[in-house]
Image (cartoon, rainbow, N blue to C red):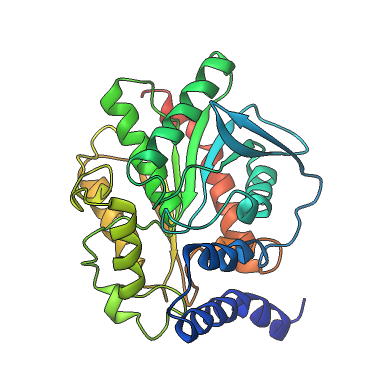
Amino acid sequence: MGIQSEQDNARYLEEMYANWQARMLANPNYTMEDLRAIFDDWHKPAFEPEQVTYSTTAVAGVPVIIAYPPESSGDVIIYGHGGGFCVGSADARRKLGGHLARHLGAEVVITDYRLAPEHPFPAAIEDSVAVYRSLLAERGGQGRILIAGDSAGGNLAIATTLKLRELGDPMPAGIIAFSPWLDMEHTGEAIEANAASDTLVNRAMLEGLAATYLAGASPTDPLANPLKADLAGLPPVYLNAGSSEALLSDTTRFAEAAEVAGVDVTISIAEGMQHVFPCLAGRAKVADDELARIAQWHQTLAAKTSAI
């Protein structure tokens, strides 16, 4: 692949987001159904992963797509899609989940958790906890269960782990969060600093999604806003984000808070990249290299989690 081709592939996400934003701005009367139709195109940046198979089923009553790698380590990753808790779907994350499965050698269970406004906070967390508990019981201690997600799904991965700690359940072996949206008060400096470079996310969007998701709940509830949580005792966390995105501060602030709390944190910031840049898996080297780094991190988890 030539340099120009790689640059074009890396820009695909930026251009797709810009197109979405233009369409939304051109029609401010878009319904939630219209927005969900747009965001279902989130599958387009990723190429189809090789030698990955899928099944569509339900776990604990929650619809899921399961991605199966060609060779499995026995581990399972529960994956929550992005979309501000209001839009997005497992279908839109099927290919990314497949790439994650292939790189990590783990089954990836992509959840279609309930969405707001029909099902506001904490419905998504309830679904995620139910899936985790069901898989934990089904597997009987065989293999590790990790929890992952992007954007709102990254929030969900962290919030689910916090809820499991509150309930006294066994913790996941690790957390993987791509560009997590964590701050329901929208105080991150990158919202303004990267306003010109982020072609999708902006303050007005965040405020609207947060109001819809919270439906009157407090924006400082730690299960809605993990930046307000006591993070002590969380399992190892892998975080990534693009340097150009409006939610960059959510990732960096969470990493700092987790480190202060004694959590084992790995953070990766991709220069010049947009929100949830791993969506370019298979298309752009920057995404494939990132998944390879996550695979290396995953290989170290056995030693890191043995003492937890």
